[in-house]
Length: 329
Image (tube, rainbow, N blue to C red; front, side, top):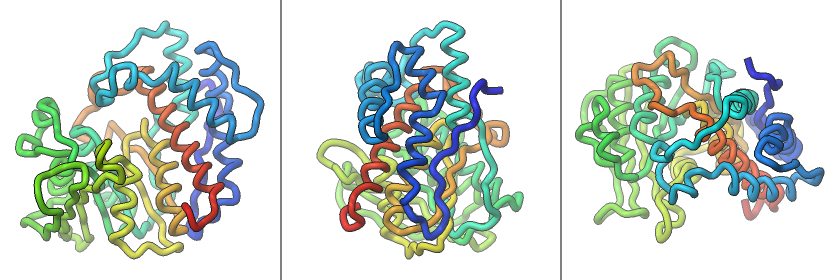
């Protein structure tokens, strides 16, 4: 049991209005777990408005918790974990639990218009698609349409050694393999894609229909900054949104890993709720309910600190977008 009270993420009901977002962001970024972590790493959370506070936290977390940058920007699973004493490790776990990065949660509602399964490393692609299918098969949720969002990130040798991924070259292929297995899809489906060799501007869409009649799409998004990087989570949200008819009354369920819930929820609010008005719930899969186990070190303290920083950055971008005029969001 965490030593901190749970800290809610910004709420997002259909016909979303951003009026309360700044206060809800402030609640999360100034909560006692954040204060305790800042104290443990030698800082003091400043008493200031939410905008300057987010800027300060960006700098502080970048200095102390950005282990990927310290490891020259490698993938999350390639970071060599630093050593933490037992008290610090426990504090990090307690804080991460209160901040919604640890415990899986069931969907808040029974019916959703869209279910989005987010891509990631090959293992996560299999875990998240399996969990999404389990939610539907067990009647926990009913959805009209499902989309798996990925990119053309090349898989590593270790990822291709996972069950079912031997023939997968990219993250989108791992998502496709996970969706086809979890939802028992037969046939090639319908495929659209960009022309030419694969690069950061490439995209693809694979469309299936499940035996239960649910429309299923697997998308690889292009990067919004193809010269400098591959597609990221906001890019996948935007690419998907451009291909569907989103309404303010729609309710969306996002399925990811528990550790990524805060930052991917904030990104969903920024890219989808602010622009289309739809409602969004974001949940992490239950590791005990899927056949592919967590990777070694997946719940190490450094991983939680890295994704608390990711949450802070996404909250800052959400705050900035919510504060901007609607025409420029």
